Length: 169
Image (cartoon, rainbow, N blue to C red; front, side):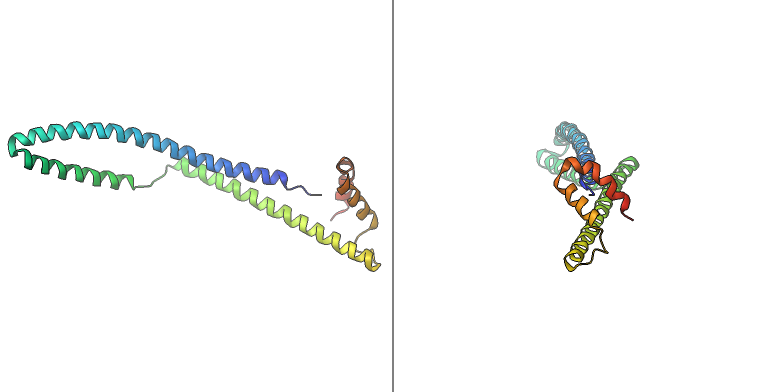
């Protein structure tokens, strides 16, 4: 009997690999963005204080605060525009493409295995119907008996299944 478990395991491993790659990429990016935000915040605070004090001597405190605020808003807009740019590197795209391909291959193999299982079950049901109707032409009785014994005893399955697979087209 066909066992789809290895293919399902391969599909699960491929899915986990794909999720792990994505999580690693996001974690790496989050670390760099977090560090950048921390240093940028410290730099902006220091520059803002310096700019405010320099402008306060020339324009007074009110206009210095307004000019500094407008400058900070412009910096925030520029940083938001830069952050919205989503371009992956070539290696990251290739890595994700390979992971997606592995998932698709595993899914295709599982579908194929289930199609084979369905075909075998159809043949078995047609053979059983033939036996009950009196005709055993569609399934030899020996194959039916050996298949039933293999299904009941896992120990005998190892010895019987190679013989049953040789008789299939």
